Image (cartoon, rainbow, N blue to C red; front, side):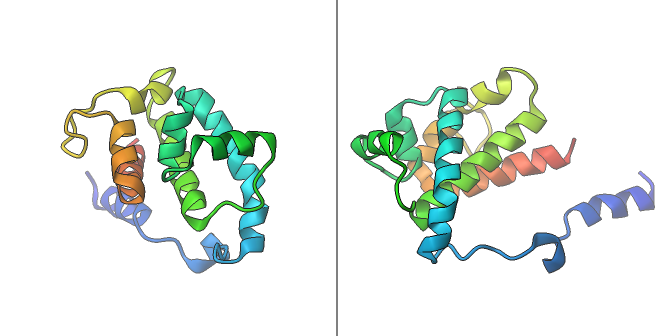
Length: 152
């Protein structure tokens, strides 16, 4: 590999400049969370369908939301999701996006239900690991997939 190619690979890993990111939303602000909530819930419903998640699995991925709350959300969008729920939603959508870059066809959506030999999963499914490990595990799964995606 030529030096220029190595430099270009390294540059891809450089954190984005502030002007590339924009302003991060203040999720501590209830009004901002209320603004994101309808879109987040719509995305979660689509994700639930694509990944063929049960209500219980979705509730567990959202940090232990009760099934009755989920069903209530389907009838009437909640005023504002919590910071935790929006963070989990963002991570799950990032995982979904990365999977669709890495894998073509049905495997992109089936991947979370397949036992995985990566040490991180210990032959368990990514879904089971993310439910058990919460946000820290979702961050690790996202980082793993983003790393694989950048190799493409």
